[in-house]
Length: 134
Image (tube, rainbow, N blue to C red; front, top):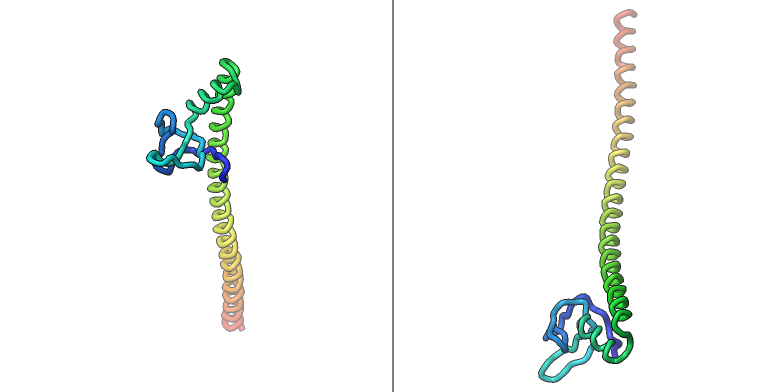
């Protein structure tokens, strides 16, 4: 038997809360089915109402806990977004480093080629000068 799981949104038919038919997540996925209805999800509002009715928390304290839960969900979304941005930035940095490495290697090759040409020109000039003055 699978444990209940918090999901961002319902994705199995009827894609709605069993209590109020809301489709707004996050929801609890019970991993259960009701014949003639479909998959059972419980939305935030129905979960809060159930907790209050079952005596898990009362009035003001339930509101505090609910606000804290909303804050955690929002924080988790922000962390996920920041992790995605970080991964993208790290990939971009890696690409820049690779391009820099390639450019540096090309620069070294061009410097070596310039030195070889400079040496050949110097030898040709010395040879021509020796022939003219010689």
